[in-house]
Image (cartoon, rainbow, N blue to C red; front, top):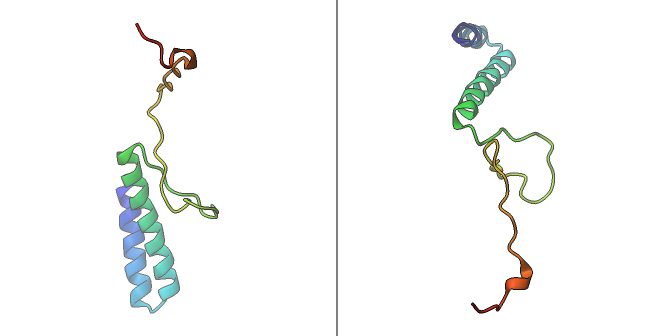
Length: 84
């Protein structure tokens, strides 16, 4: 994977030197996506947002529960106000 990054970086620098800025920008974006993917893998609980999401709150990332987590059981509503 390091060779891919190095290759992309050298291609990006060569494209910028040849004044092909569109290609250099595309390669830069690919490098950034690779770095973001590594960071997300290390974080574990966060995931990259999917483009095209609409509605309120789509700009905020969502936390996901750890694997194997089960929501606790709701309390019995008939016990409200009951004295011992």
